[in-house]
Length: 316
Image 1 (cartoon, rainbow, N blue to C red):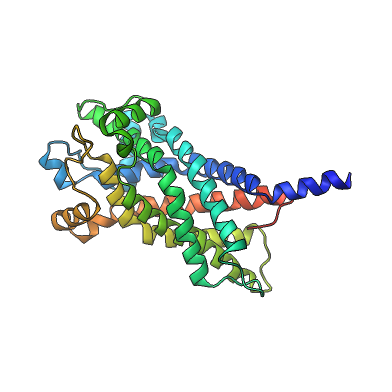
Image 2: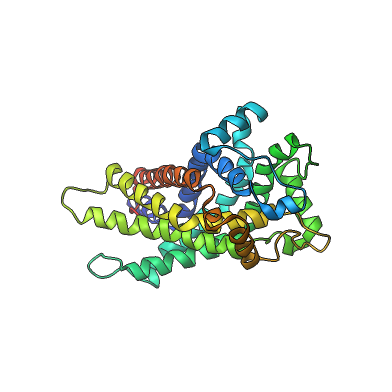
C-alpha cells in the first residue's frame, strides 16, 4: 500500500502529469474565451492597406461588441467558435510544452533560490525560452486556426473559400508552401510567444510569490485569481503588437512558391502597418485580446492549480 501511494505521489509531480494537466486546463480556457480570439483576429486584419491594394480587404467592423454582434447576425452564434478545433490541437503542443519546460528549467537550470524566491531575471529568461520553444513546435496549428477564423468573413464578401476544415486547411497550406509553409509567420509568432509568456508564466509566477509574501494570503483560489489577473494584463500590453503582425502575416495570400503576396516578412509588415495606418495599428484588437488573455489566464491557472491540488501534486 505504501509502495503504491509512493508511486502515485511520484506520478502526480512527474513531467507527464504536468503536461496532461496543462493541456486539460488550456482546453478549458480555450473553450470559454475563444469567441474573443475570433473577434480580435477579425479586428486585426481590417483596414489592412496592403491587403486592400490586392483587392482582398474586408469590410470594417465597429469595435469589440459590434464585431461580435455582426458575426452572430451574419454567420450564426456558433461561428464564434469557428477554428476552436485547431486551437485546442495547438494547446496539446504549446501549453503542455511551455509548462513542462518552465518547471524543468526552474527546478534544474535556472533554479529557485534557497529562500524560495525566484528572481525576475530568472523567471523572465525561463518564460521566454519556454514560450519560444513551445510556439515553434505549435506554429502549424496556429496557422490553421487563423485561416479557419477568417473563412466566415470571406464567404460573406463573396471571396473564394480557402479551407473547409482543419484537415483541409493543413492540406492547402502544405500543398501551397510545403513544410516551410506550415511555419509561415514563425518569427513574429515566436516573438509573440516570448511576450505572452513574460506576461503569463513570469508575471503569474512573480505575482503569486508576491501575494504569498504577505501573511494575509495563502496558496488558494483568491491568490491564484489575483495573480492571473496581473498576468493577463501584462500579457496583453506586451503581446498585442506581435499578435497583430503575426495575424497579418499568417492571413496573407501566398504565391506558388509559398511567398507572401502582401508582406516580405516580419519587418516589412511592421513598417507597412505603421506607415499606412499609424503606430496604433499595432494595437488593433487590444481590448478583445486583453479581455481574452485576462479570463484565459484566470481559467487556465485556477484550473491548473486546482487539478494539481486534487491530485495531491505540488503547487506551481
